[in-house]
Image (cartoon, rainbow, N blue to C red; front, side, top):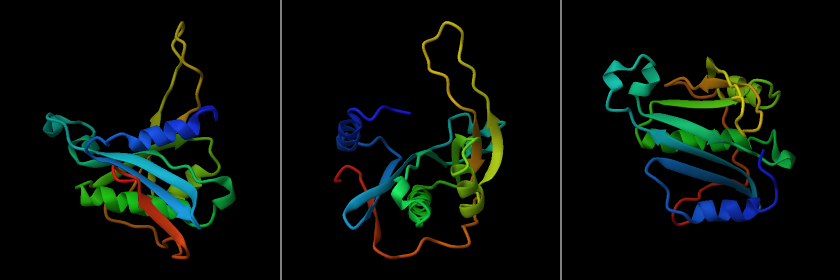
Length: 170
């Protein structure tokens, strides 16, 4: 986890930079307060897509990087609204599948993605800190994939929640 010192400045600087092609960054606001955000990128198939063993590498795919929701606003449909919004934005850029990874130990994110968002486990990501390296130890993760044509049975309530594209103009 990043430290809190300077995190606000880092986010502001990140939002001010031009986005690379396919980059999506959406923010949820409730009553003028930021309650969460989602970041991802639509990746095109590579030049060797016809020979890929992993089928998803031959498709346009949304790679979700992060989806934090403030603790005080969890279980209110904000994460669902953000995920549905980024999936829609990615679909409009040609994405056919959505992929993400999360900690296998998370009692919050694993049920959210599997049950609320209808993602399925597709891979296990193994991690090992290399001897002599300076990287900090991390947690195990699992890769989840959204079905191509299915949507969750229920969407977030409409209320006063707004999902805002914090792109080049934001």
